Image (cartoon, rainbow, N blue to C red; front, side):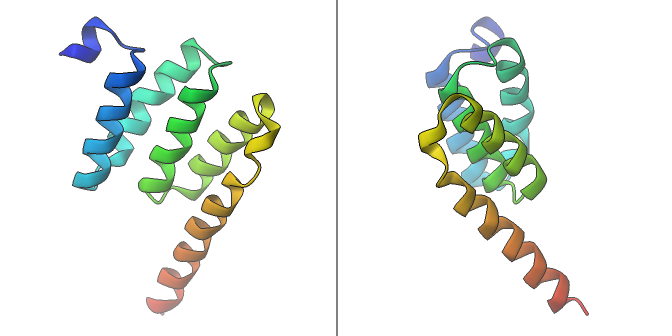
Length: 99
């Protein structure tokens, strides 16, 4: 309800990301953050939260895309690609484990 009243409130969005990550449903936060980033594409805080949401959701392509968006505005965040690589690595291991 609070996000309906203030959809781009960073404190509320951080709280949503924290709660959904703890519950294992970070993809829900990613969906909300995608809308916020679309409305405010130059906001590095929102892009960073979006990347965090995709990492927490184990969505490597989403994390990579959000990290690229973040880097377009903050080149100093290049180390965030390490988190993306870890998500891709985890996906590879789980695919191999299923064989």
